[in-house]
Amino acid sequence: MSSLPSDFDLNAAWFRKAQGDLKAFMEAFAVRLEGAIPGRVAVERQKDGLFAKTSHATRISVEAHDHHYVLELQKGRLAAHRSKSVRGVTLSTEPMDVPAWLAALYSDIQVLAEHAGAAQNVLHDFLMS
Image (tube, rainbow, N blue to C red; front, side, top):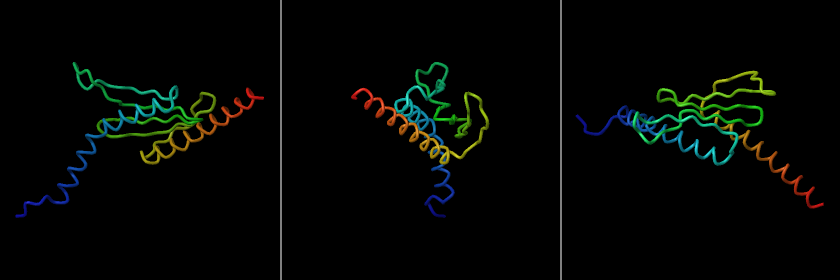
């Protein structure tokens, strides 16, 4: 019998490592979003234990343009969805795969940045004229 690990063992080990990293990923992602787009991000955190001083992000909500993005850590798995809103009324909600959710969020953040840059340019031109 060989002492080398099988493909199954290696894949199972990678899966366990990825699952353990989800809490760290969520917390790092939450901190980065809160710093990058303040006022548009809400983070829900849960204590790591009854007497623990540490906590981790369990839900990240982002308001971007006319979409509301939510990423949740539920029972050791990531769940993502995006809602379309008009004037505060939610018209539709769609579950998304995490990579597609991240790509859509990135696209909407680019739109926000372009609008903010254009507004800043107009304000600068107005004040300097």
